Amino acid sequence: MSSCSNSLAPTRSLGSVCSPPPSSALTQMLSMLDTAAEQMMVNKDFQAAFDTCNRGLERLCDMEPEDRRCGELKAGFCILGIQALAELNQWRGVLSWVLKQYKHQEEIPAKIMQMCILLYAKVGEPAVIQEAATDWLHCPSNSSVSGFGTVAELYLLHVLVPLGHTEEAQELIVGDVGSSAFTEDQRQTALEVVEEKERQNREPPLNPDCSPDSEIAAHTVPSQGAGIYKLGTMLRFLYRKLLMSSSGSFAVRRVLLAAVLLYMLFVRMDPALPSSFMWISKLLEVLKQMWRAMFAPYHQTLTENKGL
Image (cartoon, rainbow, N blue to C red; front, side, top):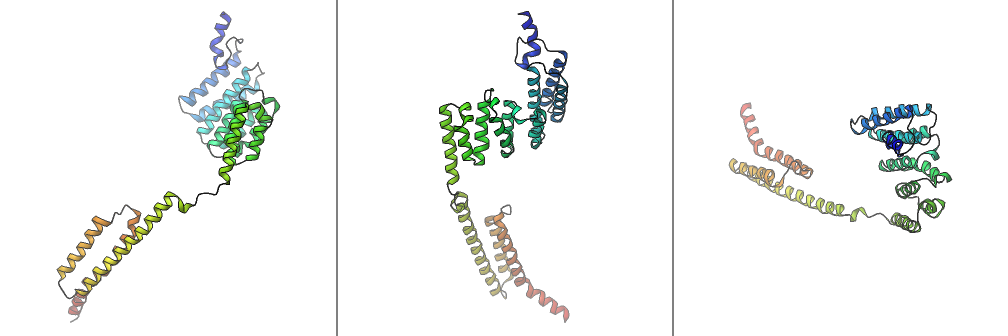
């Protein structure tokens, strides 16, 4: 009991309570792993955390393998390293970095393969991990490891189904991988999911003209066009009235012009809306015509008087 109690603290993170006390080298690796976790979770210094993981992995390569604890330390450094790369937006290099540590795809631990599948699915690049995951799942030695079923499920739902690889998905479910990874009920459910996805892919896409947004746009555009037409009609009417009253009272024309401006500014126009651009353009055009009709005669008279 005392031996187990004394070794509990240094080996807790490795998942073994009564294993032999770690050597000084493994103790240093544990301390380095804790440092990387603190840099990641507490300090949010992702580059420092990744650099610490790299140094830890390099030291592990120089050490003689000591039971399974070296493998667990290696997996811990890789898990933190993947998280750091993702936070640094360097997810494209995750798979190559993992393969650098494990040499062969089949040797990647199940937890790390799960992380890679979820990562590349999250960034919308599931095809990147497809080959590695396929090789991993079809490796006979991996069918008995803990987490094999989870890798198969994630690969099916986040890689094959989104990519539309129906035949490969069905083969995975009913083949050796599915027999090792799923129960009979799970295989049936997985087949239903794949068939539903295939049915959706066969259905023609919705007609954009029939979508709610398109209907709103279809009703909005004609109404805006009708409004602009009414505006033009009204302004042309006022413009003709101004021309007809060019020899009449100047005050009447000013009242008409003021009425048009007030109507446009306070009733019909919101400059913040894109739909008001046509209104503004039409208003400027008509106002120029009004200005010339109202003041051109006076300008010409003044010019003639100056010439005399």
